[in-house]
Every structure is written in C-alpha cells, then in structure tokens.
Image 1 (cartoon, rainbow over the protein chains, first blue to last red):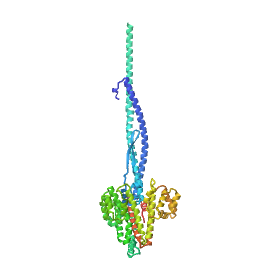
Image 2: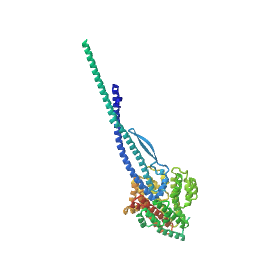
Image 3: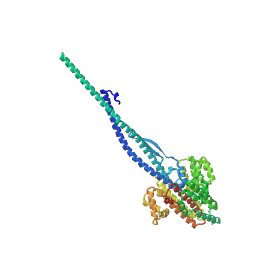
Image 4: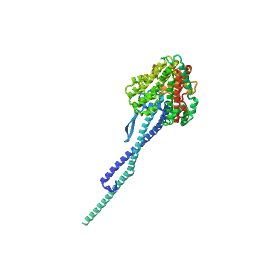
Length: 214
Length: 374
C-alpha cells in the first residue's frame, strides 16, 4: 500500500494492523503449504525416479521378450498374435487433491489381460507370445504410472513455484510495506499527539497569563 | 483308406527322395558359420544357396532381417508344395493333413485381418501358403470383405466343418480363439485317424504324434496355470488336445494339485519326465540330471506360477526331432521320412529366422544358439 494513500488516523492504523495480521497469517499458511508441498515433492520425485527406473527395466525386458518371440515365432507369428487383440488397452483420467493441487490419477483399463481376454488361441501360439504379451502389459502399466507421477511432479513444481513467489512477495514486499505504513501512521499520530499536547499547553499558559492579569 | 499299404515302388522312390532332400538341409557347421556373419552377409550367403531366388524376388520390398524371414518362409512354402507333388497318392493325403497347420494359421490371419480392417497387402505378407490352401485361394479369400464370404470360399477345405460349426458371429469376443483351438484339436484328431489306417510306419507315427500332443498339453497346462486367476475346468477341456498318451483327465487332476509330493508323483507317472530329463541333460551338459530332477524343475515353475523356460522348450523339441529321425531311419519306407524331412525343413527355417532376428535385436551369439534346433 503506498504510503501516500494512508491516512494517519486511528482507523487507518487499525486497517493496516488488520491487513498486517492477515498477511502474516497467509504467510504462515503458505509457508506451511510450501513445506508440505516440498515434502510431497521429495516423496513424489523419489517414487517417480523409482518408477522411471522400473519403466526402463520393463522396457528392456519387453524388448528382450519380443526379440525372443520374434526369434521363435518369427515377426509373422508375433504380428498374428497382435492381430488377435480384441479389446484395446486404455486408461481413465481422474484427479486427486494434494495441498490444493490437482494431481492426475490415471487408472489402467484392460491393460492386464487374462489368456482368454488376449484373443489368441492357446493351441496356435507358444509361451513366448504369453511372455511378450505379459512384458508389454507390464510396460504399458509402468508407462501409465510414470506418466501420472511425472505429470504430478510437474504440477507440484508449478504450484511450488507459484506459492514460493507468493510467500516471497508477502515476506519481502507486502509485510515490510505494511510494517512501514504502520510505523508511519504511528509516527504521524505521535507527532500529532505531541503537537496537540504542545498546543494545549500553550493555550493553558495563555489562559493562565490572562487570569493573572485580571 | 490304407496308406502306402504294402510298400510300393513309388513309395520307396518318394521316401528315398525325401531322405536325399533331408541331406540338402543346412548342417551344423553352416549354422556356426552363419552365426559369425552380419545380417547383410547372411543375405549374401543365403543368396548363393537355395534361398537365392526368393531373396532376389523380395529384395525390392523388404530389407535386412525382414527380407530373410520373408524369403525363408516363401522357400518353406515352396518346399512343402514340392513335397506334396512328389509324395505318391496316399502318402500325399497324409502329408496334406500334416501341413494343414499352416492352413489354420493362414485362415485365422485372414479372418482376423478382415475383422480388424487390416490392409490386404499387410495380411498377405503374413501368410505362409505351405499347406493345402494355395496362394490363388488365399488371394481370393483376401479379396473377400466379410467373414461370410471367407467361409464360403473355404467350403472345400478339410477343416471347414469345424469352422462352420464354431463360427457364430464374426468378431464376437473370444470366438476366434475358440475356433483356432478347435481347429488345432481337429487337426490332431484327423492326423491320428489317418495314422490308424494301418500304413507302413503308422503305428510309430501315432506314437510320435501322441508324444507331441502330450508335450503340447503339458506346456499349455503350465501356461494356463501361471495365469493370475484360476481358470475354469471347461477351459482346460477346451484347450487340451485329446488323443495323447496322457489322458486329459490327468491334466485336469494335475491342474488342481498344489502339493509337491503329489505333483512330482503324478508327473513322474507320465512319459514326459524322461524326455524332459534328457533335454535338460543335453542342454546343461549334466549327465546326472534325472527324471526326478526334471519333475522337481517343473514343480518349481508350477509352484511359482511361472511359464516353461524357452531354452528347455527348444531342448525338448530337439529331443522330439531326434526321436522322429530315429523312427524314420528304422522305417525308411514309410510316412516317417516324409515327416522327418518336413519337420527338419520347418526348423531350418525357424533356425535361420532365429539367427537373423536375434542379430537384429543385438542378442549375444550364445543366447541365440540356445534357440537353434539341430
């Protein structure tokens, strides 16, 4: 609040004090939120890093399994098995609220399938196809989980950045300005009080002088 | 219909031709040499051999591992069609019945491709016309736009009755898997029926087929058991191929067993245990690996709901082929030399495919070698 806009009155002082209390309370809450979000971020990044490592392992395994399947059944056999897929894997997207931040919550749908649901005949295929299908189902699930976590970390980081800016603004600008305004009003009011006191004293002296003359 | 009843001169001639053709297949040293080559070198090397024509024909459409795979498949189809032409009368019937498995794969690919709206050329590339259904009929089937048209075009096929019986609504959930399973069950039933007609070597052929059925059933039982949720007994009945030495009832019983002692006892009572032991002995170079160890090994996989080890599956295939070759040597003028050649040719193609695919995925040579059937 610019100092010029402040009226050095009691109501002005009360207004500034009220604003100051509010700013301090918000600062405290936002600081707590920031700390909470930082803790959540550390937890999420650890989990994301772990999931990413697992994703890489699963990707390598899926590549290996499809290589073995291509070796034993040929690319033709693998493609024929892939043609049998009747229900395509997908996911549902929802949100969960963490410290007021909407983090994505993805739920895989028809990613993990039973032998029956995969659509290929057991007698026309071999276990390498099952292994390759399993490996790719695991990989898809890991991709969905990783996407959910990584998007969550991004949103959390964005919100942390925004909250940090607010905390800094409160801490370094708004609260010091209000503090300055409060000091200014108090100084002004003190000055006015002193002036008033001096004026009254002067009047008293004049009145006393007049009374002595009479 | 008796097959090759009293050994006829044409049968002797045909069997001799198949034995000679068997010697033209790639020997072990050749595989070792190919293993050391890069993919372009393999293409050049195979181009100088019997695969040259196919490689030259396909070179403008494919490259690398895909080119080799397509070329060896085309060569396989040609070899099998040639085998059909040189097999005399009744022997041809049995060969045709045996090659029906390629027709099943082709028909299922055409049906699935049509339902899913896959481009015709893409489906065409997946087909291996090594069975009775020739390229011309496959092309006609590919021209069909609905499943009904495809079925109409297949009316002359020997497995058509199964297709017609199980086909309900094209694209219905799970219907193709059921049809595919039933076609393979009928395929084995047809072979066993034909084998029981009393031809030369047919008894041995039936023995071999029953052994193959047992191995397939056991492998599929392990696959079903390792699924996350328990499957219905009806699924086991639908999936197990009848006609093996091990009755399907025993597989049903095995599926419910959860104690080691009971499982090992039941498994040791089957003919699979000694074969598995022999396969693992050869794979691990461990002469002390017994049938009991084999049963224990299967129990460990069973108990932890894990699938069969691929390398062991390949080792069992090796043992199976050696048995077939042993039988074909003991019965040189029977259906067995024909089947021995067809199986060896099939695995020559599988070996070449495994090598180039393994190389394309940068797998180490030792790993690739474990998948080679010699």
